[in-house]
Image (cartoon, rainbow, N blue to C red; front, top):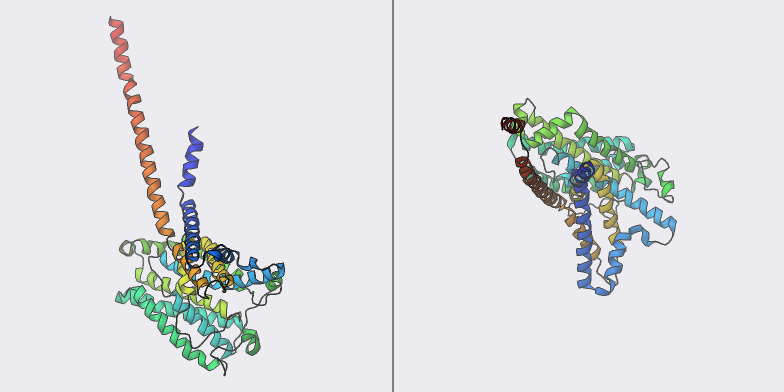
Length: 400
């Protein structure tokens, strides 16, 4: 009778279940607060607006349009997943890679310039973006390892350096009459990521490419590296306690640099995944760092800091971000979709807090159960005689 109860407790107290429950709570809270904000602005259209955000591509009545716009959402999910993996990988080693946004920009810059400026094929553009992104991330790692510069400070500074350097470099490959870069499909068709027939699954969406399955495979590879390899164990050990790792003979400085280099490579790969599809063009007058890298932080935590979980959390965040475009602009301003998406994404950052709260509640309940068992066991122990006491009583009765 006790075994089924024990299994039930283990399910609810498991780390995976708590991560999933915490993520779902944050999603529901985000949608609820977003709905309340819409009620304050214009109550008559609040239900329709929040419904439009949730439905996203399902707002279209034709199945072909639904599939095509689902493909568009997946195209932007791939780079978001790469940015979230970048944040996750570094966080597992005790580092907060807020520089993922700048590394994403650098990856976009190198891939676009390699395609339009150098005329390289797509695979070389991708490799160059990854290598330069790794170097850019390693700069933060060197500053952290040898100069004790906080990775958040150096990462933020490099975000802006990367943005304005990108604007300067890509000015040479932009259209003459607009601030946007040239179309890869017109000027560098061999640099566009191949679709390998995937576009046919989404009503002929030409932007759907191998970036989507590659991003999923990379997420699985990160999971294996972190949990099943000696290299991953060393990196996580360095994150848990840098001094203990050093005492155990691990090269903690090297691990810090390698970790941030890998994080930079992942984020830069995300930038290449988006811009080598020709889905978006870079605007050389951009004065703000793209939000893709910052959304990756929310996706990493919403996914419970699990590489497989980030696949689903990245899709969800991109789903609601794309869904915000379908909010009725006659009832709400054009910025309301960004506001609703931002509220939901912001609440996603509280997954860790929710999970910690559930762990404390679970631990408190377990302690009470143990105390109750011990309290019930004491009277029973007192009522039972030990073998020596029973023998003494028997001997006494025989003498009488």
